[in-house]
Image (tube, rainbow, N blue to C red):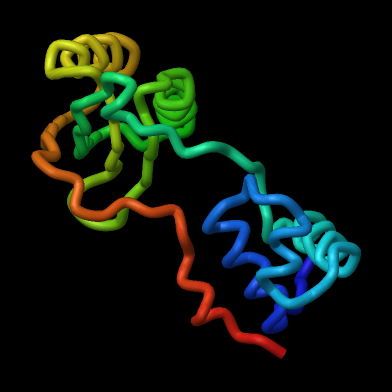
Length: 159
């Protein structure tokens, strides 16, 4: 389903990205509208799949997950059964925050958040015991410079 996004929808989406926990009244006030039209727009955007699930962003460091690894995976296996097993292994591991299939020399990149290097090694050993990979390179992030879930809504065309 395709939905048309107008300037008010874009303002509502920006508010929801900024803080989805704010009240409907607060969103309506910030976008210069009233509660019912804002609710109807949010419902329309949900039904169209523009708005997905709502979550809270937790502070990984505050919870003791101080190590972030980017894991580059090359594989010589590309058949459907291997891929299904590999994808299941990734989905079953809560340490994997993101997984992407890539074009180019690297087949997959993972973002893995763990408490420390030892916890990463446990993750790695479990993964390679479950599924065969050709080459794995782990890169430890020394500093997170920018991390956001916000999309650049100003570039979304409006009516």
